[in-house]
Length: 481
Image (tube, rainbow, N blue to C red; front, side, top):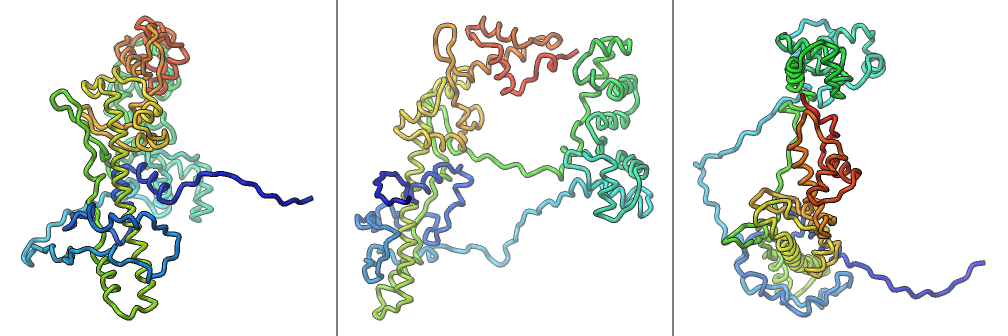
């Protein structure tokens, strides 16, 4: 049976302006520079700084974009400036027709696969063989491997390219691909890749031993069972060491180092800079976070034209309502930029002073335990706001450019009962592993004992977790001859 009833409920809803402000705070500097598309906003210094102009008006703050306001009710004077000189009159084109047009030439690097195709042209192949060889080149991934089986390639050529062949012919063309540069290209797995590279090298005792190990004792080599290899080949420690050195010089990703195959690396633009002046920390906000914005003169001139006209058509009234909306939005956006700058600065300033010891000398072991709530309590902001500042922003320090969220860490107790940062413990663990005897690397339980001796009682499983986070392999894989 259906029933109707009234239910009162209080809920909190963010306005579109609040949502946009949160997005502005989250944006890093590089993305922030291109995010506004309001035609009523212009960049650059205005003749009058609009911080103290006619837009500072109490009536403005009461405006709601959702209300429908008649054009006759709009106070045009609120949107006009006393300065009648538009920006374009203060700008000049100081270039003559004789000036050289200096343009930087753009590099057009050849692609990895096209380079392989060009190399194929140096081989004498009939049309059928060339079709198969080019298909194999197209099957090579960016790392230089063919990750598919020969039967799959034969079937794929038949179904997609109407190229009918057999496994023997594909294997023969694969041997041609294996002669291309860089050596190891077209391999089907790491073992074949390393073996191809060794076969391209000038044969020496060490190279031939290395090739035999890769071909016949690959599993023992990858697991670093060096004693087994010495016994198997009846060789000395030094002979094995030279063979391993030859293997270590090989490239496990022959396609990855190709110049034309590299992806464009995005530049990191620091949002803040910290300097040490007279043993005091000084914080500055990247100037690109504080663009000089002002309201477009063209839009104000439209308002002036509307005010001066006696007979106002319906189209003019619709236009002035649109202009008012854009000008109101521009004013709010300028205010939001200022609020963003203040939020970024006070948050980073709190982080800088919280980690003052670290920023003064760069010793990572002096980083204090710090969580989002610590900074949120200091600056009086919500934890989510601090998180937005920390997650995507970088700070330039005397010790390099750092991601701000890297300064945050959980706390652990040392043997004195004091809170220490997990970053400090990881740094000490990393130093211990770097200084260990690589012939007898330390297992996790021994690492735990050494940390305990240094005053950090940490469980073995926690050592394993920190080691994995530092991308350090287990003891057996750190072993060297």
